[in-house]
Length: 405
Image (cartoon, rainbow, N blue to C red; front, side, top):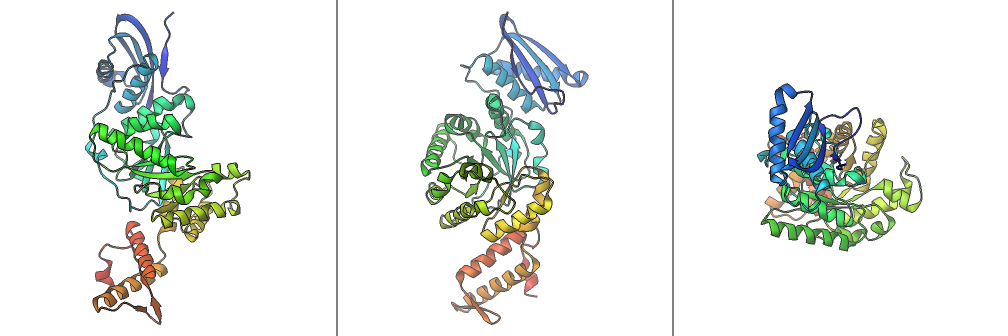
């Protein structure tokens, strides 16, 4: 009896995805489609499947598609997954069109107050993720994806990067460790991924190895755009090597900490008070600041505890962090609000910046604000506060015009 290969989720409550079954065989290709929208879209689905199979070089066998509202890029990923599970030697790719809205750039200096994690094998979460306005969206290929679905998630994320409009959010991908991570890079680097999250980073050599692979792929594909890196420290060894990791690449844009794995590694439970991670978080902040990149805090895992989330943001700000990870869209607004400077802090920052510019215009090296003298680092911090307020929509870009009236 011929073996049947399968891709796509199991269960009764599947949404925005599909199940695909393929039976290799010598008979001419047969495609069967079952969908709630057969009358409207069965012809389009069959045409999409035929095109994908032709691209992959499949002209025989039987393909069955059970559709649960999958978008074309999702269906193409599942078709390619099932074919490559049956024929691992196939190298061809069934790629959706690369949409113009997926081709924007990012900056190393942009704010990353929020990083929204999306499991790479759950496309139902992709489509509307950008509407919630996170600073960054992480398509996750690591911990949130079961081992048996790594290949499918890789193709799903690849296709999503070419297709989904994330409304200007930074396009991040968390890759796997080791050789699986290199396979992830091969798939996603040509798709305008902007920042690679390197999980469980313990040495600078891990960052260098990822960067070397990325540079090889960019050269091979003839691509010129810049790819940034965000190492995640999740162990005692990683924390102790934080300075070297932070400085391992000029394209490092930040340094993050993963507290669930870190506390497990040192053998203690994670608490709301966070005393057990104070040393590690301080190490991350200082290493990041020494390398002039952004220190980014962990996730807050209780999505129903907004008060606890806000307290964590306040503590993170006090330690010097500039952002948190998010595991649910409802966490985005509270984090943004807490990272928005208070009216008191903003007013003070504006006075400092205006006084500094006035002193510079008169050739003075000393800035006086009221009865206090402030130096260059204080001015720099005030400029950063103002930029945070502008980014949060709490202050207009031309704020000086109104302030000087």
